[in-house]
Length: 497
Length: 117
Image (tube, rainbow over the protein chains, first blue to last red):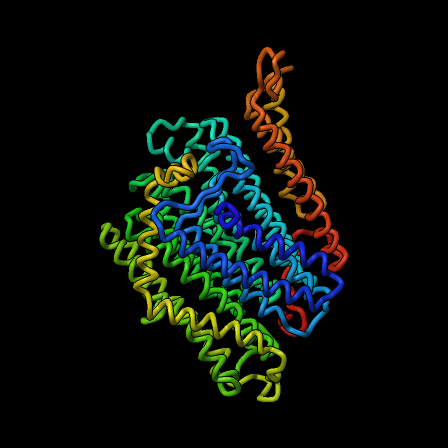
């Protein structure tokens, strides 16, 4: 059982090691990379099935007893996140199988992706604050290498912004972890949750957690600390930016959901602040997108506004709202990564990423247009796609909590999102290419990209049509989140459960 | 001793923040390194400061100091050292490719509109 609990970290790390050993043989590295990502999907699937039980899976690393050793706890939310990480990881490496470009860069891409996946999965399964810091650093190192991959002046400019601001956020996190230990004597999330719920948390601990929430807010790109995201995501290679768009900010969102639900079960001051932040994030993100004229820049600003929805669910603090946030997380990761994939493919075909220089794709490849429309409409929340259900639950939860203005902001953001998506649709697909029909490059060597986009779009439709089971899972996950006792018992009495 | 450590952390943070806000990459790299030193020393002090006490159980020991922050800070030092190496490489690469040493290299459109797919 222990081996399975740590498998989300071990699988990508082993893949990375085997990949490094096989480095001289590019073909083998690609095969190993795809197999490794496939195994991660499998691990996630098994964990989702096993986590269906009410008691989370847990393991103690190094044989030290909780709360002294490092604990790994996988509840429904963690299992779902690992599974979805596997899916996006697989999609990314498959999209990255292209033949063009420097072969060394293409190979390194596969290696770094698995390093990043190890960090992301580690952050999803750990139950220890300091260990979370370590995984953040692991995923940061992987992401630094990935975002700069291929080099070039414009890319390196974005990299520096990304690098400096993310490092600062991580340092704030480390500082707050030290403060938390000094104030409470523990770094175990379950135990911290119990201390905070008992109402006996010392003021220094509250200050420390506030700092920690700030660092997660930077990672999750919340208002007003989102500036690094639209300044850096659009410079990376397409599969890299899709991977980042899908996963990285969501690690911050996940950490926020984890800590806030453990420490403050009832609506309170923290939720009040988060509610305002969520509304501001939604509006500023979507308005920022309206001012952009490059595909991936528009999409980057939409990441910001979409993160606002998830934080809205967290801030409302009712079981339904948290279930909505979890559902939104699952839906959003797939949709957003897919939009970046499609955007990248469209830019590759038209030869530009600026809307003014694109066009004519509907006439040339109607299928690509349809595959753009599915995630784009889902993002805006058009029924029956997955985004509709995610937004419906959040709006319903806002109204049930009496926050009609938050529901209004959510709906308004949806309308602006639709506007933005139709802007991309008109400019990229509908209008004629300014360079004429001949300027559109032929569709060669992109079969793997088509597969990726198609499967992800299919998943969006399936989650939309089969929203019932996914929502039930999200509600069960939210129920688990509301009970830290369960979380803590899984760590301290792994045998007696 | 507490005063000394606290002022050391304060000085390093101050210098670090000043350097991070500069426009050139070299000071920014130094600033990040200084900030991570400050955080590391702070982390170390979180186990309370004690002189001549042992962190490991020993029959002859008269008292103990908290070993956990020492273990944490060891991890953090290794990680921050690795991070500094990564930033130095990135900064060098950015300098060599753009012939400029500023953090904000500007957003000039490359030919082809940045479609490096």
